[in-house]
Length: 216
Image (cartoon, rainbow, N blue to C red; front, side, top):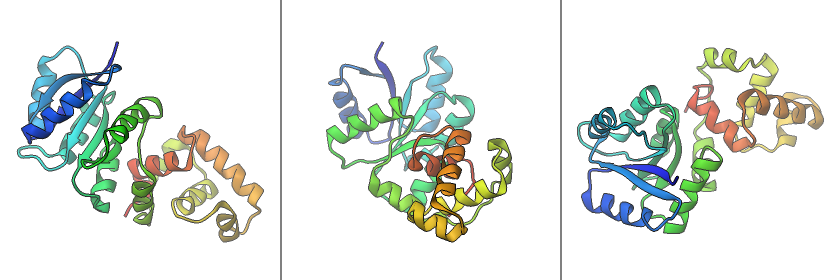
């Protein structure tokens, strides 16, 4: 069966354009189109099928993309949220990630990038370009998620590695800052990756932001 998609955008032309584009992708289909988050939730309450992916505009009346992402995270956790925006504001990116978005896509992207985003969200669990990931990392600072630390069972040194790794430092530079050998840092990385169930540094950063382990 094709991957089902919900389009949530208050601009009808944009929604129709996305729908027409998605219909050209054999492995994807449009399940429903909503004009805001409240409309989406109302339709989902009446629909037996839940979409695999929800494309969310950020700026919408009644219920915007930020609140909609949070509601989907709580009510329909299996739905993968992909944010759509005209802006690459760093605070918007971080806020959407913390509300559960699996990716952040600019509306002026190419159709090939849009399709790649859909593919990555389904196969990898997230989609972030190098540009957006850099902006995300740039705004990370201090932690406030002790409960999340406990849930991942991170010890003090692993958590210290995680905080430092949410930066643009190389692993060698992280080793210098932690006053340990590079091999030790490699060990921290493998353990943290395993505990957080991620495969890449980008995935680790995204999960850290989502669970409040680091903030901006």
